[in-house]
Length: 155
Ligand SMILES: Cc1cc2nc3c(=O)[nH]c(=O)nc-3n(C[C@H](O)[C@H](O)[C@H](O)COP(=O)(O)O)c2cc1C
Image (cartoon, rainbow, N blue to C red):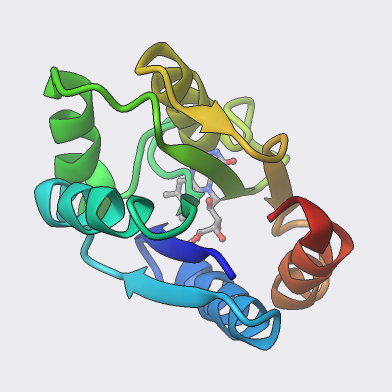
């Protein structure tokens, strides 16, 4: 069993449904999950490092992209704190589900930027970034659950 911190960036609520579907799937796979709809960097970090001493703890970040390739408002403080963090984050594993719309040139830009940022901070990605295209994907919640179950041996 691993523990997961699901960190959500959402403006209009669609990505929250994706995150809740992931929570359900991870619970089904017997993992422990904390869902953060208003992510607070320092409390998530504290919780992650405490759990890390007992078992593996992974961040699953589900974020949409808004504006012209921007992060949703609710996750911006988390991103700023992550940028400014000087603590060693090299023990943190992460996975990203990036939600966007391929009709924008900046398709899923927030998710890709966060992927780069976490790598520059020394974190390791357990799985390559998963994109969900709201202009094409009919059931994004089901696709997210399928992605987790197909990769269950790596979680
Ligand atoms: C004003 C606006 C700007 C958007 N900008 C982007 C963008 O730059 N890149 C992208 O991939 N999707 C963009 N989208 C699409 C959203 O990411 C998509 O609708 C997503 O499902 C919204 O998720 P949320 O409901 O969790 O906020 C934009 C949507 C809106 C309404």
